[in-house]
Length: 269
Image (cartoon, rainbow, N blue to C red; front, side, top):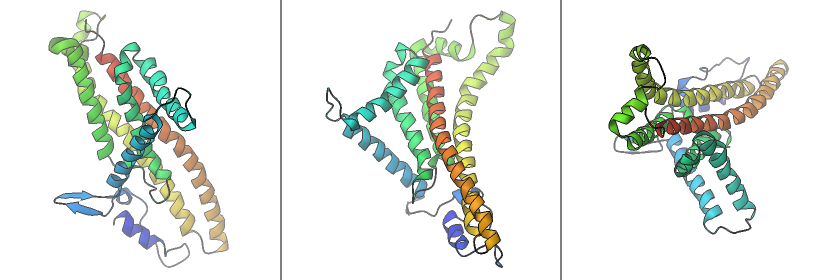
């Protein structure tokens, strides 16, 4: 049962009535296609990702298309947001060498953030990053940039040493540590980068979905309304907490990306 079908079924069902519905699960994250192009189905998460991209481009284009020496409010907000990533992430993590990567990190931060924020936007109400394909795609992009910078900076042999051979350790340790470093940098890093973002957005959306549905489901009687009120209050608390998690996950994703780039720019010893 897709989320669209589940929603239609839930609207006519309340506690103390002779009905019920499946608890929110992975099926709540499946959407009927809006349209199809050959074997490719274009659905709601894809639409939200596309709209999110347009919103980010439009925002920064409007802010910096005609920059002023004394910025207006709109340009000032954009500059503050841009400087947050530039100074708080790129320079803090990478240093002066991180300046060329600031546009990439800014784009990554705001793209991840707005895909998460869709969970709280009316009519959208779905975090795009709770669909595993999107975090995987972002993690693969970061991994490609990471590998490219590593080998471009250090050459092939130096890049391998950068990825697999940490410096300053006794030689016998390398027998154990080299394969661990190889697996960690090549496979574990992109995997954990994707899963961390996906799992947080998936779990948060499930929790909000459960208590939102419970609020509606328990209406209908005096006792049920008491339960529904408590459920609604918890929904509001979870929503505020989810706003924090959404921003935090965008920050963590970008900081980890900057950390990988910082390591890639280190000269192998």
